[in-house]
Image (cartoon, rainbow, N blue to C red; front, side):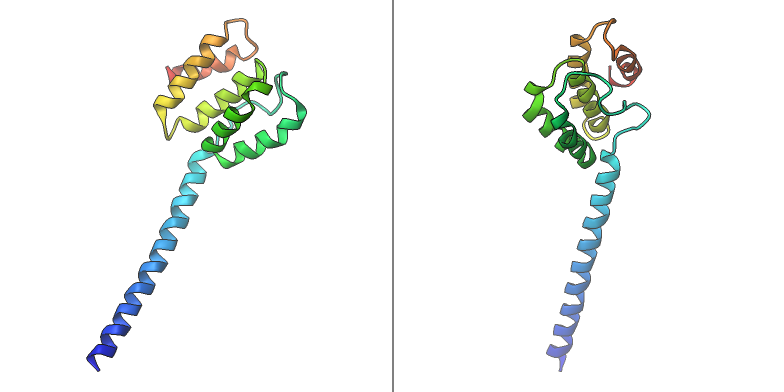
Length: 135
């Protein structure tokens, strides 16, 4: 009889542990998604600057929606097809997204963008706004 009770208790603890673990993972994913959303107040509207083929726009939006890691992968994969100032604009989106989770990476990328774009750049205003945070 005591063995049966021990087995039942063990099963209950196991089931409770699995349920707790799945709940923890769902909350963790939800927090990660919330942290990866980019700041709408600093972001520019899509395709506001020239320099990117229209066929890449849906892929870019999909990557933006998934978070900083996917946007970085998109940049690594399609960087050669995107020209300035659009490339810098997308990289600034990445800076804003990754700034919460990896501030040194955000500062590094921001510094690169700032060096490539002077005071006459079409995105100079946005660079100036972000400089207070990422310098």
